[in-house]
Amino acid sequence: MMRLDSNEDDVSLFDAEDDDVRKSRKSKIKHPLASFFHLFFRVSAILVYLLCELLSSSFIACMVTIILLLSCDFWTVKNITGRLMVGLRWWNQVDNDGKSQWMFESRKGTGKNPPSDSESRLFWLGLIICPVIWVIFAFSSLFSFKIKWLAVVIMGVVLQGANLYGYVRCKVGSRTSLKNMATNYLGRQFFKQAMTKQEES
Image (cartoon, rainbow, N blue to C red; front, side, top):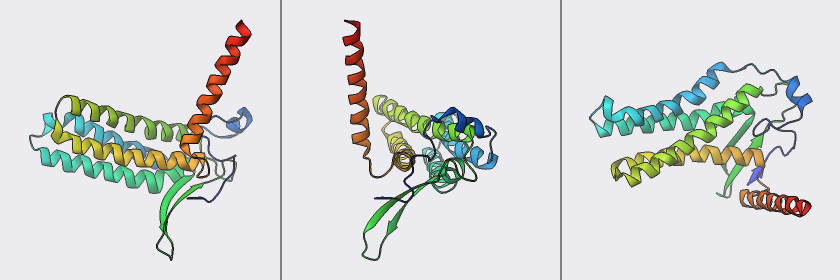
């Protein structure tokens, strides 16, 4: 795994940057068409899933429509909106030896065209909330014994989860594994609580 631009001043995950850097950015949306399509395919797939039984009696038509919308969303988010809205991209590259390498790239946030706060917030919220909704759909279809919908819901979890994982890896970096990051975070929280309780005693 490789990270092409490892700089700590790249795009922030939830706009948690210094106030002076944040104030220098304009909060208006610079790429309205990309922002629209970032959410359009995701929300459309969810709406078709929810309203499918009301709109059509054909399971196959609903399944094909949802999978097409999810595929369009995967391609759009991976290839266009991530690069335009937050300056991140990821891809798989096969070298001359036939080895597959995952590449994660991030643009510096303080460059010529830094992403706006609004676009960054819209990107990350859409990227995180929609896979959570598909996971909820997976549990609901499993517990309500709608097994035929489980394949469609798993497609939603996999496609949207893959984009989420790829962009988090772009943001966090390929050198830091997500497991180590979570472990360090939990360790810091535990230590902070222990210190707070010790000061109270």
